Image (cartoon, rainbow, N blue to C red; front, top):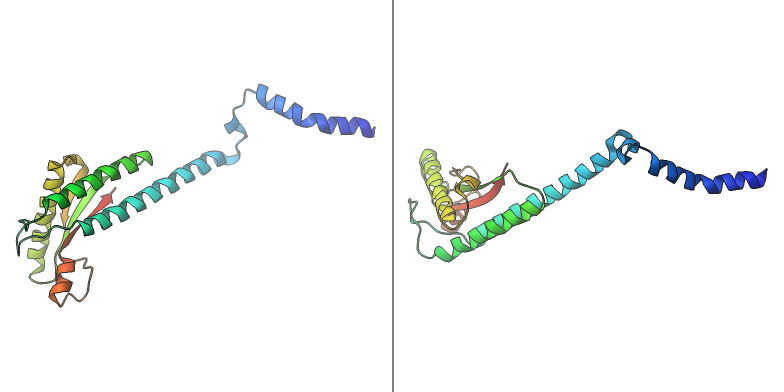
Length: 182
């Protein structure tokens, strides 16, 4: 009897494999509670989140490195912006490729304009919106699709430095940033 039991246990894996192979049930039928789908979705979501985080960090870094200056109380560029805008447009093209590989397709690039705390809040909001629109227009002229980018004015609502009570601190707060919007 012992030999018969041993042979049955040896044959069991082969029989199980044969049953699974010949069974009309798919592998998902054996999946308890959709665990395979959840695990796959979770991994894809993690990859997507990682790509978005990396792209946003890259956009912020490149935006700060290639920051264009504007003339005082104006949406007109100061000299020296052409190369910076060219690099910035290249960064957006690279970001689109990276996001596409990660399966991220429904997004826009948001250009947010920011001012220092000098002046009236309403004026700062309007001025920052005009400056963001100029950046948007320049990036579109350099190949970014109009439907993929949006400009918003933030005024002095999100300062990098507080208080901005010196010319250097005020200059840090006068900026634009580009991030992904969903």
